[in-house]
Image (tube, rainbow, N blue to C red; front, side):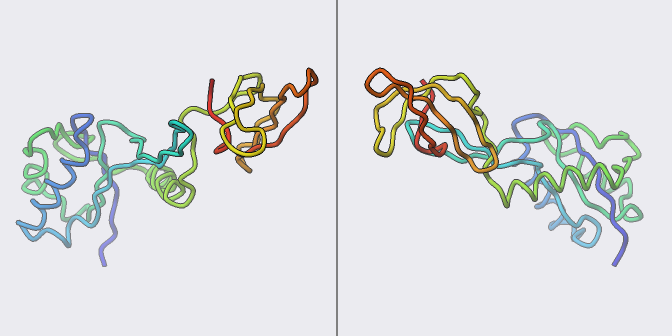
Length: 180
């Protein structure tokens, strides 16, 4: 198998997924599957809390870019022109002569995508110490308190709630509270 390199393709932001599909069809149509191995829209899974529910979505790591894994010896003018002439594609980095990404840079981006597939737990709106939250689940349901400590790793919060006029520390997970 040929040694491959990763290339950055500049595209119109917000249309990355559609462009990826078009490029894949173009590659199939021209039977270039052995020249272009992979096309990736670098995204990570993130979640927000909406109405007490955990909502997971994809967030683009590099808006306006698609990563293309290709054989550098097969990446000829015809192939480059076919891809860059598609609607909403601007150009490869390096314009007429695509410049491959450094291996370290490609691995960092791809690693972030892979980690995201495993973890799927990066919060878009993280909890902050001192912030006021409402408890929406458990024995302290409907209580309001201030965050004293945030543990991102365990997805836990220490919240101080007032019970009979005294501050009481309660440990809760992220899913049991919502921002005020």
